Image 1 (cartoon, rainbow, N blue to C red):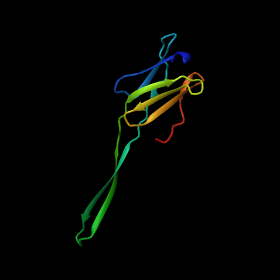
Image 2 (cartoon, one colour):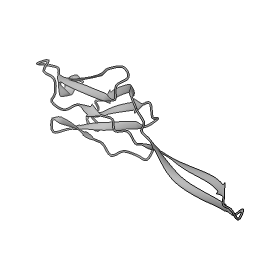
Image 3 (cartoon, rainbow, N blue to C red):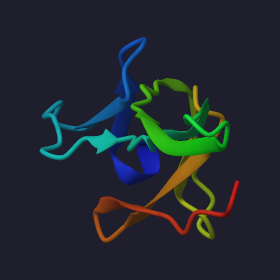
Image 4 (cartoon, helix red, strand yellow):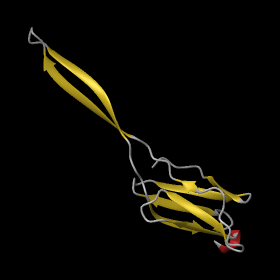
Length: 110
């Protein structure tokens, strides 16, 4: 990303994107981290009581999800200046470069 003097990289299997300044080689203090959402599964169990009446118990099971960066692409057009990232959870995220730093762009419902 030469027009903003940054280089972005990620380790394979990681959910973190690190940045460093192109001209000096110094790492940027803040990394971009993909936040994952927990998967919630509704579980129901049916049991009969002594009278033969069915009792239904419902419970939510919360499963933590681990996501990783698959691809990233920087769109350097003056109108956009956005780093687009696709991840293993099927969501495409974007960060805009604004006033010397990346901020999370408005995310569409995807």
